[in-house]
Image 1: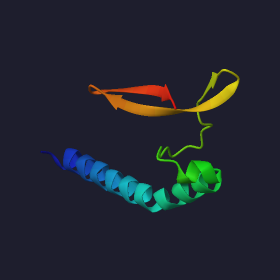
Image 2: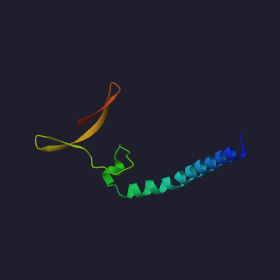
Image 3: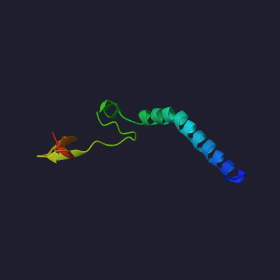
Image 4: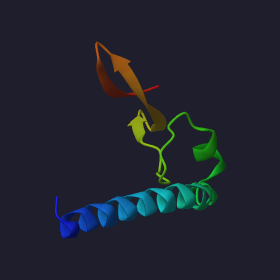
Length: 81
């Protein structure tokens, strides 16, 4: 390796390391902000989405039912309960 290519490798290594440290530093802040935007139902839900989402609903005989993600035979299906 020449001096220039080893210098480029060390720069890339330093940048990747700094990006990793920055990501680890900012993750708790992102988690706190996304948690503050969620409703109480979303916080207590088993769906641990990092982004606030409205729950899926299914209308059955004029009544709104919640949709749940049900694993069956290796596939995940949305079923109303």
